[in-house]
Length: 216
Image 1 (cartoon, helix red, strand yellow):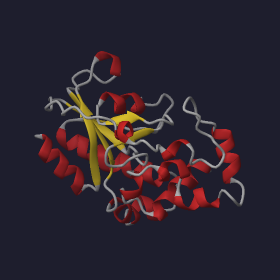
Image 2 (spheres, one colour):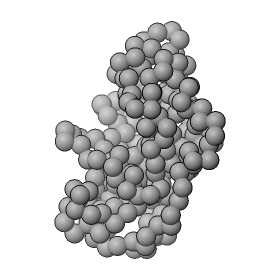
Image 3 (tube, rainbow, N blue to C red):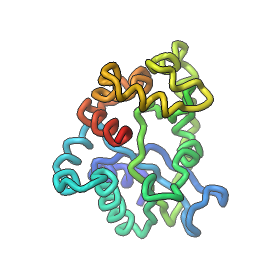
């Protein structure tokens, strides 16, 4: 299956290919994996499709992870590939390092990952390790290189991002307050401040879903 076929197959499952790379031994993938393809939600069509899924409707915990395991797992089996997921640990698959290896996703000034189409709203539903190689992707520059304002640096109401680490305790404490309702309802203020994120198409309802999952 060539890359254009993979893109179409991913879209048929309401997913998008965020990047791919030829793994090396240091990436910790199974033997025989010649290419790793990183998968995220295809916005804005992903959320309505997910809401119509049995995982969303059954009321059981972790519906999006279970949807991902079912859909990506079945697709990988069809292709004779191996499915990987950012959940289910510990240990957890090193999606952050894999993302950087793709050359299509970068570390932002606040150290969250940033993508050329998704901005700071980039997220992973899984990955597939293919038993065949894909063409090397063209070189790209991080969108942060040309973002002179870098509004993500100062958008967090409690300065949880200092460019070195992420103060999760301050973040959670803020979300417990009335003032934190904005982030809980519409998503992380720092992620929303990214100019690319603003045009990505993630619906507020989905942002609220992720914030509830993060803050539970």
